[in-house]
Image 1: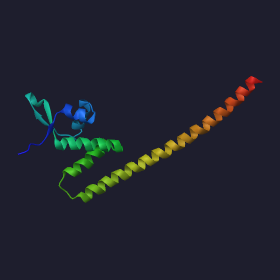
Image 2: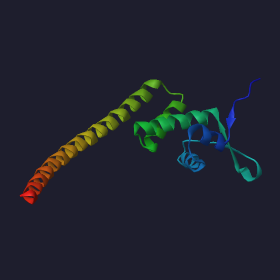
Image 3: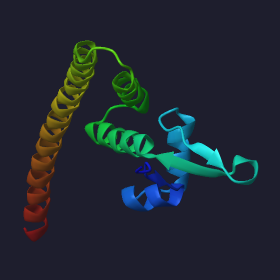
Length: 135
């Protein structure tokens, strides 16, 4: 009978290039639920499920989702419900996030355009100052 793989906190920290503190934070957020072993339950033992949840959490973070949004979506996949509602929820979260990113992009473009205008004006003024200094 094959045993399910388990991981220590340092195994996961190494694999995902995280600090053990970050992994404990994800645990505090309810994203990971390791078993406790050893004296006083001090040693955390992570399952393959925890590893997958950590991988999905990091993917959600890269997408720019909050940890709460990530947890909501990941928790849905743990439930035995139909995947339709899960996918609709995921699409809603992605649409909201996409809208936020598009708004941020529009703000950045406007800000960049303004910087370019100021830069052009400053260069023109500098050219006048340098021309006057030579005269």
